[in-house]
Image (cartoon, rainbow, N blue to C red; front, side, top):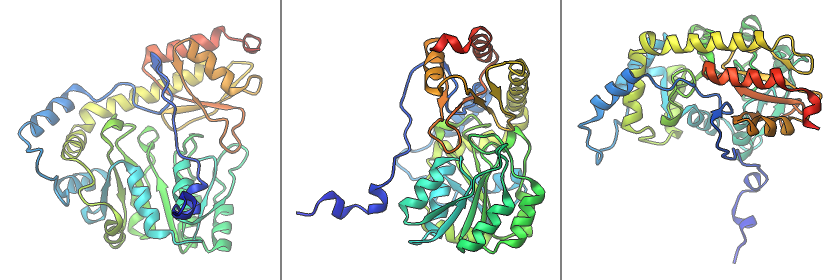
Length: 361
């Protein structure tokens, strides 16, 4: 009888799974979610459109209506839109398409940990190029590393999770011009800073832009994401993407959300940005911690005088759940929290106004 070690790929057995321990709290600021939820007008219209849908029937094999809507919304071509069960599925399909055993992918960690997990599960090699001391991307160094490793792709999360920094447009263009592999820009948080790499697609067919409905669109529970790619790349991605991968309810909700974005969702995004800046201003004078600038819907907090885990537990005791990211590379003294509704942010600010490092010893 063969053992599990003999049956399961060694690359998978070595992995540490992406996990998040559920911890209930009245104020939940640990997953970068939209605190305002989906506007009622979008919910009502989605329910109306799906009310008569036959649950026994598959969703559209090719969701052409949503592809066309996303193409208009993003400013790209419908045949270059790939829709996934969350942008994570597009990441998985993309890496399945690119990563053969031993293939190299260049990352800059700390970043979204799923990139490394998927590369290594597929038998690839991660080449990590650390960011600069201010956590900005060192794109010239990433280009140099990609060339030396003959990497098939460079992956950038911009704004980056968990640091909140964006890639320099000038350096990104230089990378696209000089690198002969794929450049993947994960724009999961783009609405919070108006970054937009899509105009570059026309000149750089090896550029891949990833987006999601989980953040600005407030639809994390419906699992919708999409990729914007050259049509010939979309044809290859569709070979490794699962059929009928997105359910009809989520497809409909995404369609309605885009149709109503300007009226219903954009104002909420603008509120989150205002709250992000208000929180940053309120914490600017703290003498025992440092809030880093962010262009996303979250903040990275440096707490050198108290262990991040201890601070997270103290916040949880006050009913506020944040993310301990001290296990990430370079972030042993950091926590992350997303921007909540104004009253949730007020509770967070009140905690830090009253607290002192000696309270946690």
